[in-house]
Length: 178
Image (tube, rainbow, N blue to C red):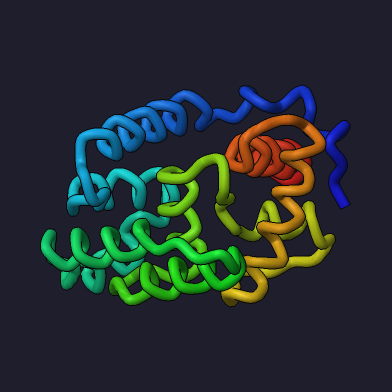
């Protein structure tokens, strides 16, 4: 398993660091402007481009069914949910976001990560490989919660945001495996 020492020097090293910072800043500004925070189709699309990169075209026709109004309603609900049981809160938020066509756990985790960078991380094969030393391309909500717990622990050890820790792990894996 990856350690805090393995990634300590990679906090700002990712090739996506600036883009990520810009997206987080834009979403933070929108959160302060929108009373009940939601994403528009334009906001949603920007996050998809960031998360999916070269795979952005995949499922694009399915995603077209997500009208601006549907995206607003679904994201408003997902982002507003709070519960004392934080595992249940994560589960609800992920499942609600996955009701959007073309959104599965990794994309839902990306939406949450950019909106709440202090609480969430993006689950993908790179991070999973570094945390659990196994290859995986699909993820369930329980697997995401397990992954998130490990990332949060590393973030606490480093004194970083959960999102920063996740991005450093992604960069570490990219340097190791290309």
